[in-house]
Length: 185
Image (tube, rainbow, N blue to C red; front, side, top):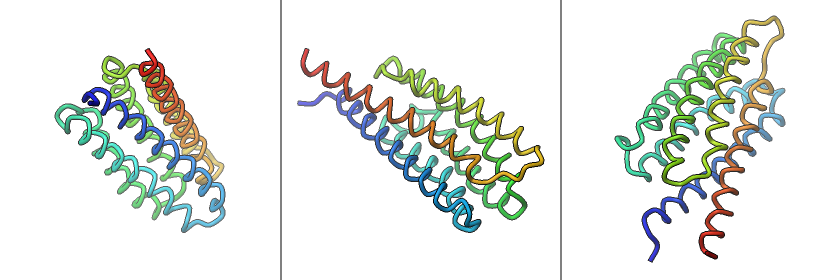
C-alpha cells in the first residue's frame, strides 16, 4: 500500500513535470507568435491564469487552502494579475511588462515560501526556492525594463517562463531520482 507521503510525493513530481511542460510550450508559442500582437496578448493573459489554476489544484490536492496559505495567496495574486494583464493590454506593452514584474516578485516570494515549507516533508525543494528568489529578481528587472525607452514584447517575458520551466523540470527529475533511490533502499 502506498503511504500518503509517497502518494503526495508522486503528485508533486507529476505536478512539476506538467508545470515544466506547460512553460516549455508557452515559451515556444511566445517565440513563434511574438510578431502577432493579438496572439502574444492572449499568451500573456494565459500565463498568470495558468499559474492560478495550477496553484489552486496543487493546494487542494495537498491538504487544502488552509494548509497551503502561500499557494492560496498565490491563486489570488495570479488571478488579479490575469485581470491586470487584460487591462494593461489596453494601455501598452510597457504596462504589461510592469504588471508581469510585480507579479514575478509577489509570486516568486510565495513560491519561495512554499518551497521552504515543503522542504521538510519532501526534500528536493532547493530548485523551487532558487526559482522563487530568481523570480523576485526577474520581477525587478522587468519593472526596470518597463520604464525604459525600448518597447517591450512577449520576448521580454519568455526568458522568465523558460527559467521557470527549467526549475520545475529540475525539481521533477530530482524527486524522480529520490523516489527511485528510496524504492531501491
